[in-house]
Image (cartoon, rainbow, N blue to C red; front, side, top):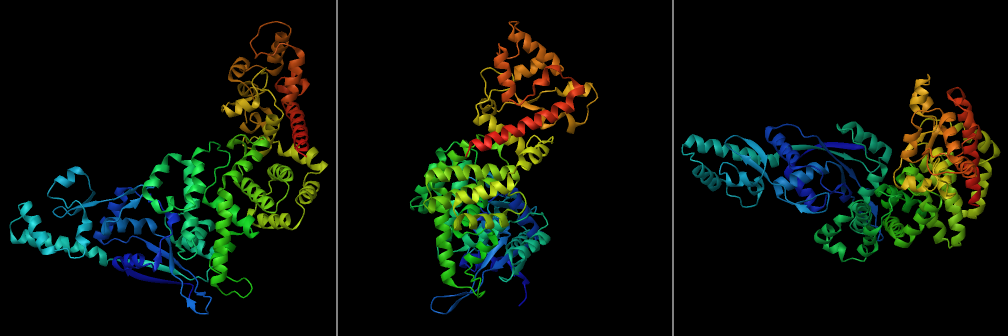
Length: 601
């Protein structure tokens, strides 16, 4: 069997296929993101006879039903949704759903005299030279003969030649429906990797679809097992987390879903103010699939939703039905308010109080999958908190999900399901967090100029959990500085280092030279050598008002330096001691991170 077929299909036939359900438009590809001018340009290209690209559909496998008969799979549109929606809006007159879920018509106007298109507006609607909405030309029963006569009369086109010309132009415009579009039909036997490769090679815009996109296509196209409900739960939940103001638009435009049991399960999210974990539909799918199916590869989800039996390689309706039911349960567990908020509580208890402190969405995803798995296994809540909290930090420290996350997700979730969770955690800690890691590997990882380094973030988490004050601050702690989006400053001032020959960005921007402090303290330090400004801080502790924060005793100063992992040698250091300072501080930072991690046991 050929892996794909390429055919030319008229626009009229393609739109009729979509209306009758032969080709399904996955709703995950909504909302409509084109503006009116792009719709106009598409119609203009068709009118001019220009090519408008290929439509790509992926055939669902034929499924064996419970009675032994075969249900032939429909085709899923995986590329071309914007063009198809634009054609439905312009030619059929269907309203489109915009990014805020409001339905809006897009009317394309046409001037037969000048043969030009424009997005309709009030001025055009008042101008008799324009047809304000070309959709009327494609309605059943449209009387072209009388339309041309009336149009010519309104615009004083009285000669036979003028009427004939307008008639030809209107006929040409109507013939757009008969224009052909290339349709590439991909076989269900192609795996996701092959489909992705074909998509990338054909799509001139270089858009890349993920495996989650294909999974959502399967979900959205399903009409038998509640796939569209699953799609809406995911879509609305993620959207409302980002834009809670669109809640009313959903009330107005999707009454059926609003009245369903599912809407009440997700609308709470509009009042959630935390932004540490802001999942998109890929994250929801990955978490729900990982913990509910004990698998990590989204390609397996696509196969299971298609009804694939991995042993016989056949496709069975019973497997598809079970898979959709399991996925729905997993998604509902994800969006459950109690689950979501308790997981966020665990994340924050690890010192992750801001999205700026964690850049690995995969760590948060697996952490949530692990939380849901252990909760479903009825593990004691205290154990769940300890395991999930330490696992998140362990994974950040060793970069566990930075390489091939799906394989590692698959491996880890099965281990936690089949074994005592605390034993798995401690076994992994023993292998990954050895003395060599704390004393050497971590110190080496701290040798970087990347401010978004996970190691620096964990150091800040340690400071947050330990209630440390900002550098040279008496009352303002690191937690407050981060929450108020304070700035990171240099202990050895950047300009000071540059002035003394240390000009490479990678040198003066070492994270071991970074510290959170108040802006006014940083301004006071300016470009002085550490030994100079620390000497003045010392004088301040002896009663001289120098304005370097509010620390007024050596005891407080020594405590502050210890909290910020500043070596005591700082009082005698200038640029010639910079590398020595970096080495000393990295060791102190590593020790603090180790102490922090061990405090979570």
